[in-house]
Length: 55
Image 1: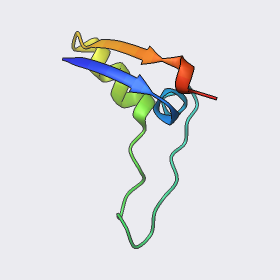
Image 2: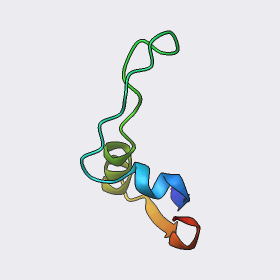
Image 3: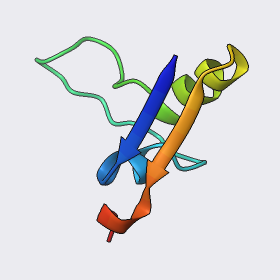
Image 4: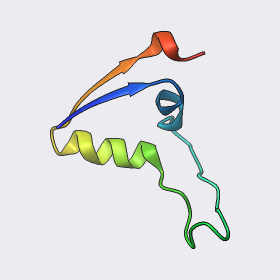
């Protein structure tokens, strides 16, 4: 698997992220993208990020 991160996704994977709840949209918390990214890397995903887009 290959992942390419741009813009806000780079920051969404930051350590310490605590996704908010979205009542009425989903019954659980939003996914923690940092945890999902670490799990993908543990499964041998190749990850690249383009920081030029990130402010």
